[in-house]
Image (cartoon, rainbow, N blue to C red; front, side):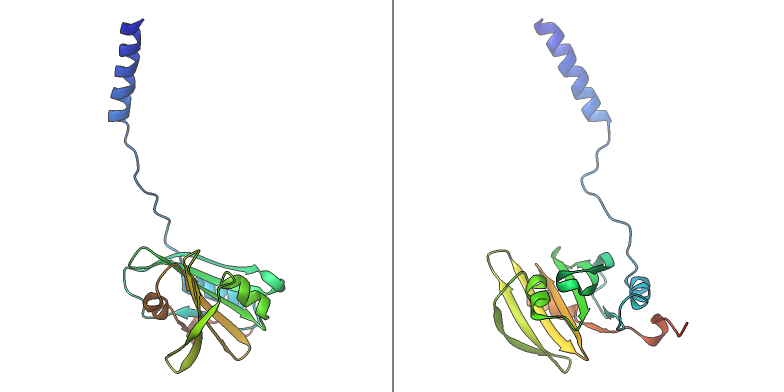
Length: 169
C-alpha cells in the first residue's frame, strides 16, 4: 500500500511540474474614450475622462449604471502606478446620499485646489479609501480609490474633447 501511494504521489508531482500555470490574470485593454462616447448617449452630460495619466496606469473598467438614489453614473476605473485602484464616478444632479455612497461614507478632510477647481477631500481610514469630490454645472465628479491623494490628483478628469462626444442625431 505504501508503494502504491508513492507511485500516485510521484505521478501527481510529474503532472504538477509539466502543466503550465498562470500566476496572474491580465484583463484585456479597456477603451475609456469609447466608453465615454457610449455613456454620452445615455447621460445628460458629457462624461469627463482623465487626461495625461502616467503611461503605466491601466484602465480596468468603464460603464454607465444606475446607482444610489437612482443617479445614472459614469464610471471609469484604473490600476495606478503603485498597483492601487482609482476610479472616476460622475453623476448629474447627484444628492448628498449619492456622494456618501461613492465615498464609502467617509468623513470630510478639508479641501484642495486642482487646476482651478476646489475639491473636497474624504478619508476613510478603516477601509482605506480616499476620495476627491467636486461639482460643476450640476455634474458631481468623484475621484476615489485605494490610491493616495497624489495619485488621485493625477486622475482628475477633464471634459472629453469635442471629437469624442457624439454629435446631434
